[in-house]
Length: 276
Image (tube, rainbow, N blue to C red; front, side, top):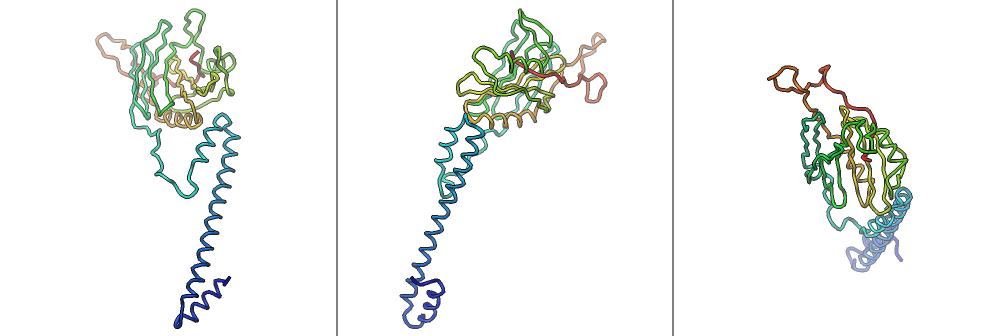
């Protein structure tokens, strides 16, 4: 089989006479080189895919089946469809006003609207918001009531103690998936615990206290939970507290909320969390 140099020389030397044979040789060599390039590309993609898949399965064993399906269904040569838009884009403003009993309100940016809060329960708790972030992923914000308040045999502990209780004494059927972690964000100093009830769904709760009130922000997902928690952290970065205005000491003068830097402005709670 002629080499590239030989083929080029022959083509140059016979161009004035009959270049057909030399051009056929050149086309054959170029075709063989293109075939080798395709084989090498496919081999490289398969090697990279399997190496990455092994690493992800090792790090996220609970998502192994989803990972294998996603990786092995991807095309070997370029994307078959345009990359999808980010399903977690924060396109909605979610806001809950102060209730008037001292508990603060709040607002944030989320991928979906508030699908509804709830009424105050006999224990003083209230579901502030329920937001669908994307298919199978939900955000819940609950105010548990005043820290230290009691309802029957249950006491609302400070945030860190609530999270620790959930991690070490989870409700029946639940199992904590790791230790309690500290998380700092505009929400305040929060305490986070992740748990599973045994099915595909995984829950991550972040507990925080504000002005003596206990809050928990939870994200529940049935797959790719690490991505859901990453989306949660992006949402918490947009969190803004709206403190309830203190009662005016002068009759007839409306209440006015303290401004930032005012010595009378309440500070962000620093205790840890739990909805149980």
